[in-house]
Image (cartoon, rainbow, N blue to C red):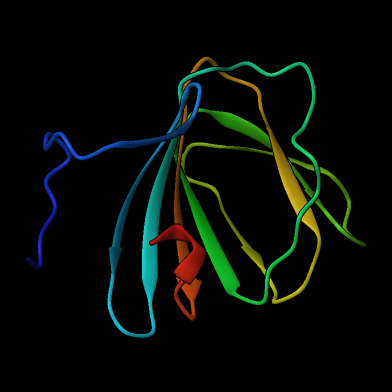
Length: 111
């Protein structure tokens, strides 16, 4: 399948109030994360991974925390990127936030 309609019922709940949808090829993965449990009182714990990551904020508002960078408040239409191995995290500031992440190589741990 080369298309995934937004209306399709294929959301995976990865933890309470956090949902994702995934499409991928051999070397590229796009993941839509929908956080329906905001706003959060604090950020998630920092994490890192060997994958390069880009992110588009499709809905809502977040704080982005990235190792060695100033904290940033981002909202609908903003983009950010995370180099391989860099520690980072977010804090959801709105009731709902939808992030469109792309990873290379693909996140085998998400499959």
